[in-house]
Length: 219
Length: 369
Image: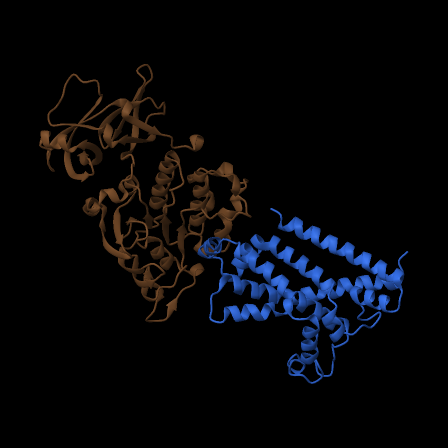
């Protein structure tokens, strides 16, 4: 039987990954659109910067977030957070998960947008629909499958996020302890049975993610 | 409302990867055809007019409103230009039904801008029965009819057509051309039309614009400039034909013929079984029209008209002769040898001989499309 603690970890993980993706989605849509539609000087640099979290050790990404959101940091002040500290909360864990899976989302969204026939967008504008109407009525519906596929894959990556999370959100049971952190802790304290249950959860989730991704990208 | 002359003034330069477009032209009311070899800048010109591309310099003015001007820093967004643009491939929105496609632009119009009701267009283009269909299951001709209806539903001020009939079979093509002429008459929309088809230019256009190497070279009345076309540039095995609208006079069911008339000339053609006074489209292939320089008696062909040669042009191995019967222009294609031995010249009186069975009747409803 599942312990209430395990159920809590399960739902916290879903929430952290979900909110993380949700926060990053508008940025990923914007970046994906720019990469698929615009040519400009420094585009490859832009592309590289956005892909950085994919290859950087997640611990480094975590450290960068730690630095950015530390008390009195420029970003903290700019966001008007004042003394509110998001570090070591589930929100920090969500941010970490979102940012680490950001490059995966961008890749899928960029290719989904690239596959939309630009003539159709142009025809739509010629018919009197402005830029945003065209985006929401033509571009988005025609690329929705690819975007969903990207979101799902990024979600899978976000669920598994460990390195950046432990740096920026810690490993606080009931607060920031997500599935991978719980596995780590159980193994550390030698609770193999709990570890295996968490691992089975993870494998199940991974299966669901990959099967849905496959369904969306086929045909 | 009469379309103003010079409704569209274009004077632009645009450098693209392979050439420089240098367009300088003022379009007259009516239907203008653009003719030029591929790669001569026709599509680039359309893209500049419609706002898909921004010219490097110059100006585009439609109905006295600047759409683009490098001097004044004006570049109107495509959605505000009111230019209808139909491309070679119909570019229908694949995720929408036929009906949603047609109403797409109409939805975004202000009430005061709704000059053309989609219902009327659906009727004109004969696509009522397609409305609930998925656009993926349409034939080439159906797609273009839907695309034209969609574009016209947005009540554009000007209609640009970039070889819209390339992937359409010939019966559909004539039906669409006829509908476009009706649309042009009914809604007074000027049309600019890119095509490589000789017959299409002849039967459809009032004016012709020549383009070469990215430059607009000449623009003027088709009748005056028509023969400047270098035949082989686009005369690729196309069957030249004269398309006429005739009016049914009488059906002779026992004889299997119908008599019809256009401008007072009576044609004998295969039986159509349509009531008196109905309008029928017929096509006569240029190589089926025989010329004689004196009246001939005792011949099986039923259509013999006296006509005046208005123009002659050598096209490869043939000579195309345009003759006028009571204001109706008919094309015939004969050999150089015939021209020489008959001593034909422009202005000569000749007799045109056409067999009843050489007149093709084109379906003008959609039952065969």
